[in-house]
Image (cartoon, rainbow, N blue to C red; front, top):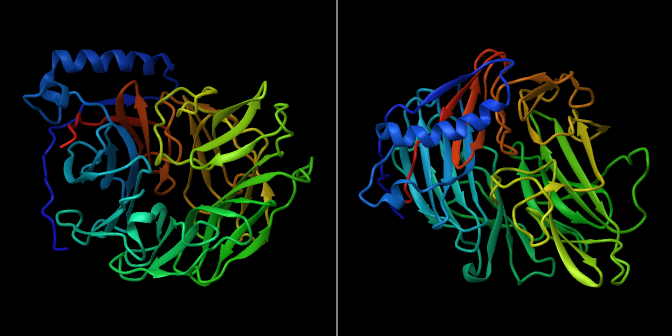
Length: 446
């Protein structure tokens, strides 16, 4: 398909507020009230206007945040209408331009820029698409993701190591495991089918490649082991994971989510579920992931719970809902039980149990050893790959969306958050001493 001319709409300078050290968390509540008043008193601050009032005030969810420098970055917004918008800034969020729009399903978006010019946007789900740019998003090419019977497949995960080398997982009824891995070396124009990466009855949910050779999977497995490839996804092997002090359960299911951090750093989240004992209510089984949906029983009636995991990212679901248990399997979440976090700074050869702060938040990595954790009004760091952490320091910032924290270097970082129904970005340029909030522009799902 030929190049598409992206629609570009310059947003006027967005309202910015300074979040300083030690500010009370009451600030976040006041912000929500202030934003509503701002829209009424100063309508000129809106990024777009429309004769249709409902479209002009449409809310959206952050689906991805990707910055390649302190000033240059992108965010993707998804709307309830099933549309998405990709917005771009070159001045640290003072101005935003829309570069891309399209249809997106509930499976979410993948956004990855290798530098300020080359990037990939992939629409996940049954009607998957891939968009590519080599000029910073001014022009895009687009292709449906093919490689088989497109009508019977659904792309669940995409990972690009650079502008050209990428991998995707797709569900398909044509293989026993239900999942196949495909690889591209031309930016997604063509794909090679590598077959099922998981062994036996294990299920693969997500794929992550840190370079063109080394990749990891997020799986539902029979035992607590990780999946690793060192030949670009052609073959996969089990990597044993050390047991926590209490040991691993002897039976059940193990959700094993392994992701690279930086360099040869790796982090693994293991959530275990004992097999259900009839309809007694004891035990549970994983129904789907992501998000993690678990099937249990309550008085003989099946009950579904949606849980959060340490490995969650902001794609694939709405993260604006409160983190509470929900029996109707909505996006409201609590932390999954029996979670163990493991970290490695040598590519998975050795592992250590890590103990990040227990409160909900997001983790980012400046290198394999140096990590940041940011929660609601709190900040902590680790200099040994997550094994030990500094005492939490108070910050006047809202709770980050899971997976949105990007630590570009020891001084610069970005993360996304929701302040009520408004999406915001927070950034620091002095190593988290001060944070600056950018209220993202109001958008309509064009």
